[in-house]
Length: 115
Length: 112
Image (cartoon, rainbow over all chains, first blue to last red; front, side):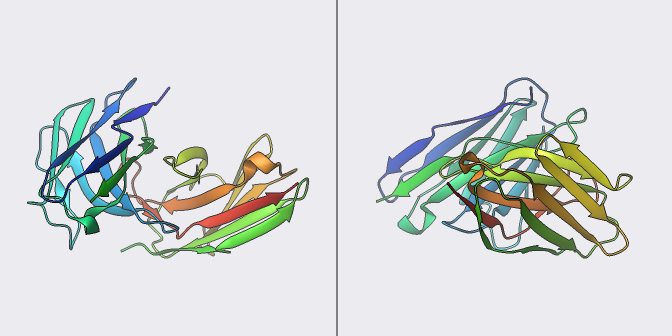
C-alpha cells in the first residue's frame, strides 16, 4: 500500500517552454502533497505544500508564478514549471500524506533537463 | 523552526558489518521520526519510523533508537549487504502528515 506515482519520469525541453509533472497517490487519499527539488548529492528542498482544494503554500524563495501547483483532487497534484530555463534543471520529487497515512510517501521523481 | 543534523555524510562498511547513522533535532515538539532510503535516480523510500512514545523499534536487520531527552535518534543496520548501499535520510516532524525536516543525508557504501 501507499504507492505514489509520478509522470513523466524524465523530460527534456527547450528553454522557454512549460513542463507539467503529475503526482498521483494510487491507493490512498492524499489530503496533503508536497513538492521537493533535489540537486545532485544534496538533500531534499521543500518547494511547496498543497492541500486538496486549497492554494499551495510556497517556501521562501520559491516563485509561485514560476512553479504552479494544483491539487484538484485527493489523488492528484500537478507541478507546472513555466518558462523553464536551464537553471530549472533538477530532480523534482513529490510526496503525499493523508489522514490515515501518517507519513509522507514519495514518488519516484522526475528528472527535468532544460536545454 | 526545526533543525535536523545528520552524521556521518559518508559511510563505508564491509559486507556483514553494522552501520550506524545518527541524527539530532532541535524542536522538542517533534514527535515523529522517519528514515528514508534513496537509491540513485529514485525517490526516497520509507524504511522505518519511530514515534516519540517509543524508545526503539526493529524490523529485521534495521532498527531505530530514539533518545528524547538528548534529542537524537539513530538508524542501525546489521549484517549489511551490498544492496544496502544508498543514501539515507532522517527526518523529524512535530506533527505527522505535515512538513518534514530532513537531515542532509548519509551515503552508505557496503563493500563486498
